[in-house]
Length: 111
Image (tube, rainbow, N blue to C red; front, top):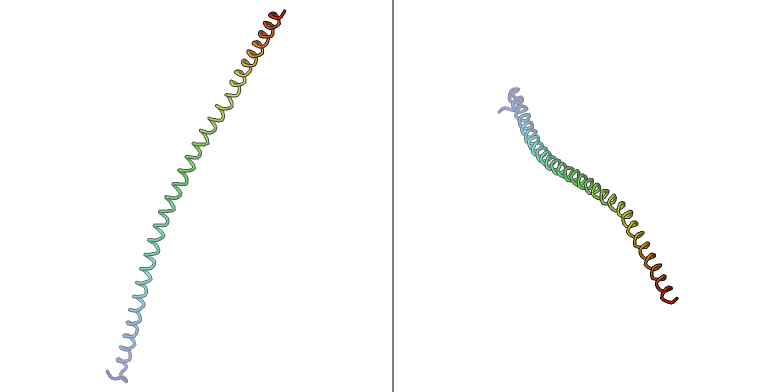
């Protein structure tokens, strides 16, 4: 090619532009690969986050059920002292009556 030729200069400029576009295209392809990798990583992380949230909500539901069981157990325990009080009351009455009967028998035996 003759360096003074107008067409030759334009062809050289077009070749330079094509090379520049080729490099830009390769850079865009590399960026695209990086974006795809990032998107895949984000999708995996998102999936793991969803699993973590599901586990957390399952744990919360389990805790809620445990609290219900504990509340039921507390109610049962609260009703038992009344029953225990009644038992203790009868034991004390029986012990007092037995002591009284024993004292009367002892008094009668001495007298």
